[in-house]
Image (cartoon, rainbow, N blue to C red):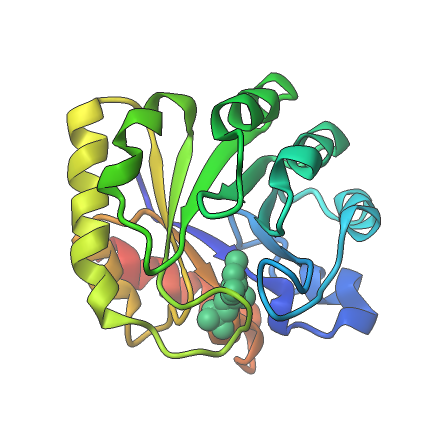
Length: 218
Ligand code: DX5
Ligand code: ZN
């Protein structure tokens, strides 16, 4: 599969979200939206009402990354609102199978995220329930952090387990993905790349998306 780029609006100007999204609308594959509740992570961003408005403001499929304490309660609502993909965290979900199924039933891709300290092997049994596995390459909560190189073996392991499982599961990386790190992620087996600072910190966000994709496909 060609590399897909999912720009994260976390570092965009929240007072001008529609304009910020428009900057990448013609080149991005997805729009990554980080939902944080100040409990699962020590930061607070936005929730369902803002996602509903974003869905009206763009034709890009929206990739919702739920960094919240109670994803079992909230994830289906994001899928029902029209998100293209909804990702819940392994560390937060109490009923992951039921929640992943509800996401799929509502017509969205079901994503499952692992914090840096969470082993991918422990979740091999869930691969049949998911459309995308997210290997966090920073501790979740903030944009602009440094990529954790020690996650590269985990990306490789995740790719190996996905291959063994045999399904069409995308492997996403999120955190510190940039021109300096994306090739290593792609080489390790990632195929969906979230980039916040590398896109919205660039003078030309659209050009940054194109150039990241070209690097990942190299
Ligand atoms: C961090 C978020 C990321 C964040 C990535 O918890 O999940 O999506 O926006 O930002 P960068 O690419 O700047 O590390
Ligand atoms: Zn994210």
